[in-house]
Length: 584
Image: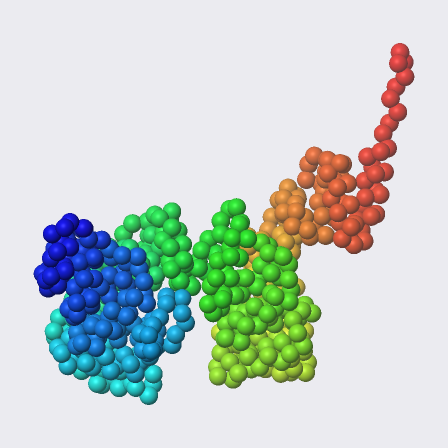
């Protein structure tokens, strides 16, 4: 420090403070702090406040939260409203404890509960001195503090007063308080208050203004402005803004699409603590072509530990399959159990399936049935379907086909899978009298909803004429629909129709094509038919070697005719006429 500055600080503390402010404005932070500390030590309140801020923010001095709070305490005790307001905010954040004998206040790593009582006392003192920030803090405490302290109407008044004084935090709080009233006519005013706070650079206000701009609430829809505002908030470290910007860039839902940049922002959001982002990063690793399940598990675990139910379910799947982690059925079941207990429907279904496969714990069956029962009774059709399956399989309840039919019938009102299951129960007479005509109607509803097995079942009934008129053309059409969705049985059925010319023109080559498609998907009888076609050359050229392969596969699947056909193929293709002798 120059000699003149040292002498100034020693004999004229007020002049030292002014000089410190000049040095700080010119970027000479360390020199500024030294003079500021002299002025603070001499008892100048503003200097004490500024020194506290320097310690908290690491400006011109290594950061020290305990020193920062100590100097703020001194300034607050001497009536500085700025120090009182900042100290109140630290109490709310749980970053400062009540004064101890040596003024030791806190360390950054210390774990403290927020002290709203102390914060309110300081905020009121700051407010009485005219601090708009203190007024905003009172509004926050009365709206977000412990229930015993809450007074939303009073909070609204304090926020309004703070906003009128131009405090950015007051503007934001007032906007949120207005939003709580759910008055559509206030939307423009809410947007205006949010904009005032955003213009001051508050990250949360920037984020909220982006949402309003994206959806046109209180302001015209402006996707370009929304993306810009999300980015501004994201660059200030707002995790939710980082997540929303990431989604917009990945999906191209606002202005620009840039998947690489979007994934980078998604990782930043996850590292900043956004659990949805952590889950999405896990999904990126699990879904990319390289399938990095180990990395996916790391991100799923981060989100699951924070209570994210879909992440817990995804992590459970990795433990149950052994992808990316050591296979651990017990840990997988534990994760599913936790997510299911929190109300995640997909996890409840997964746990039920695990129980059906003999996994989980004995109490899981009762829990699963209880979850589905409670939701089904309140009108949840998916839960009604799952409860019906519990009764059908005896999961957590006594096996009861009649009750299974009751709940599955109720679910069939809106759940396509239930429509298919109900049709099968009607067809088989499980839990009720068999009714082929009614079964056919329910298969038709499920088939229209895209249930592939229902398309096949309806096609079979149309082919056989069960439950109504016979229609080979309609049956062929449905079999083709199901085959297009990859149903091997439907592919085999189409092959059989082409072979016999039923509902379609007789066409052996088409028959062989469909038999081959079904055979490649492991359909045993299709493998038999393909082997027969290749052995006998029914559709044209023979291929004994390929015929043997397919017939052996059919035999391995237990198709009885395959062994006889294989033996016939061996006889057919090993009986060759003797070659004529040389010179004959």
